[in-house]
Image 1 (tube, rainbow, N blue to C red):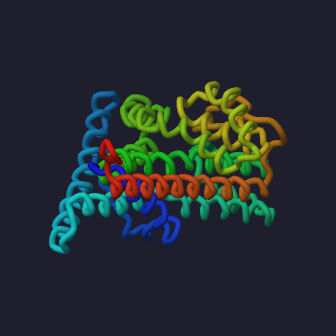
Image 2 (image 1 turned 45 degrees about the horizontal axis):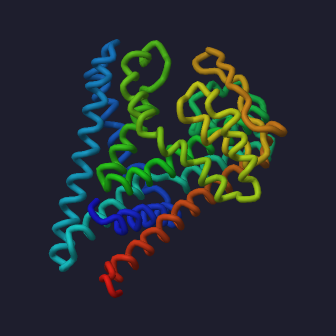
Amino acid sequence: MRRPALALAAGAAGLAADALWGEPPGRFHPVAGFGTAMRRAEAALWRDSRLAGAGYLAVGAALALGAAGLARAGLARATRAAGWSAAVGEAVAAAGCCWLATASRELARAARSVAAALEAGDLEAARQRVVALVGRDTEAMDDKELARAAVESVAENTLDAVVAPVLWAVAAGPRGALAYRAVNTLDAMVGHRSPRYRRFGWASARADDALNWLPARLVPLLVAAARPSRAAATLSAVAQGAGRHPSPNAGYPEAAFAGALGLRLGGLNRYGGRPELRPAMGWGAAPGPADVERAVALSLSVARVLGAGLALGAAALGLAARRGPRGPGG
């Protein structure tokens, strides 16, 4: 996007729209249609090879970029007809695509449903609901493991569903927002270490890692700003534990949340029957049911801090542009 003030305003507007309305209903959500299309593409393209997986990723990226281009072109025509500039039309398109790519409200809803089941002592319901948040095996989880899974998922999804899509919308407009959401969706679909996807999903997983690299490292700063009284603990937990996580990015939001909430995250997870021991991050007790709501509150605070920062930045740049450069005697 050519005008930085409009780019920042678009990101703030997309976040605000998600906070107000949440995601569109599933049957109307473009991501649902994208998922259906990519399941069909997988059936046609799957081979046990990285090259086939790269082709699958290319198809998904092309679909996302094509959708963004159509949205951009349509809104450009509408704004020209209304007498507005093309830059305003692109900003509106970026805000709309940012809204579609973010999911802070849906993340909060899903995590709170797990917390409600845990508070009611209904472990079976909690196990069924946490599946919407995590990819690990849930059948034998106890209440502590379920609470930890929910807190860790809220932390990681604050990156995937809030910070990263907004930053990509700001950096690259509607194409950035939808391309990020497409790659993140493909990683969720095929970026697993299962026998079927170890090679086929490699390209999607590595693309998701690349797109999340910088946003992941900004999450601790946003968490520290959202909980200033815990800023030192947040940054200490990140310095101590983030780099020990097997994911190049997930350790940063998880460690930041552990420090900010005064919890200890990490432990034994199971994926497809295969155990993985995740390093401990943060200090304090393991999460309980009440800590899920605390994690949700922190995630929503991070979204508000990010939105406020973008809005203030847009206002400052807009004011500076109105004043214009001063002459030698100004």
